[in-house]
Amino acid sequence: MDISKLDLNLLVTLDTLLAERNVTRAARRLNLSQPAISTRLTRLRDLLDDPLLLPAQRGMIPTERALELQEPLHRALEAVRKVVAESSPLDPSTVTATVAIAASDYVQYAILMPLLELLRREAPGIRIAWRTIDVSVLEAQMIRGDVSLALTTPETAPETLRMRKIYREEYIAIARTGHPMIKGALDIETFCKLDHVMVSPEGGGFHGPADDALMAHGQTRNVALSAPGFLVVPEIIARSDMIALVPSRVAKGRKDQIQIFDPPLPVTGFDMALIWHDRTTTHPLYRWLRDQIMSLIGDQSAN
Image (tube, rainbow, N blue to C red):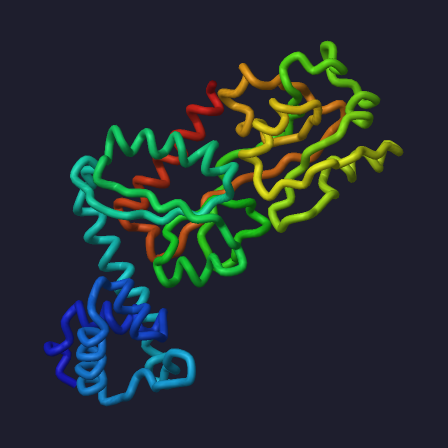
């Protein structure tokens, strides 16, 4: 084989096709047309003297030769990307890009809103596409490039993805300002008497960490409303005599509507992690974005 006929674009195309195993998705990821991808695949087949990818009922199946090439080719291209990235400092103010970030509504409010404000100041050409996180398809979304960053709990993150714990979240109790049954601290008796709002991301759940903690103390509570996300909860609490346990960041900036209390018994909090795929580890833009998120977390912790 004459290696001089293999250019970098062909190798990047092969790397993407082997990851996607689908011409349409590879074309979308590389910002090319399907005919352009097919033309490159034909050239690769001729140069390597192998079909490389065979049509299947869903997508394409790699040949044995293609499978042998996949890992070393990917490592080699990552090394090239790293060299280029390290020699090309990023100027965020000049970047034009769309970045998809997957997170729950709570994280969108707590982390992504401050991130968006920062980007408007320092990188106005970056657009953020917020997506509701679905960890069952997160790995596939990141492989395809449909999602570039995600924020979720470490135990739900796919093991094949990169992960960095960014903060520990604790629960607080909230009630409306002027609640007739709460004077000063929130005791466990009042906590159990009042109706509760809880969040069940899967929908319709009425049992959570607080119920486990109560059962350990021989107590129960009445959950009157199960909501699918945290963002609506402070508004519901502000307009009713119900109470709720929510992550502390959900209540930030709402002290004119609600009162904040320590829970009357220990309720286990949770860690939050930043998730990304190997292919964006050395990319200057995504490295910069990860650094900005970490900086925002640090600023919030300091405050």
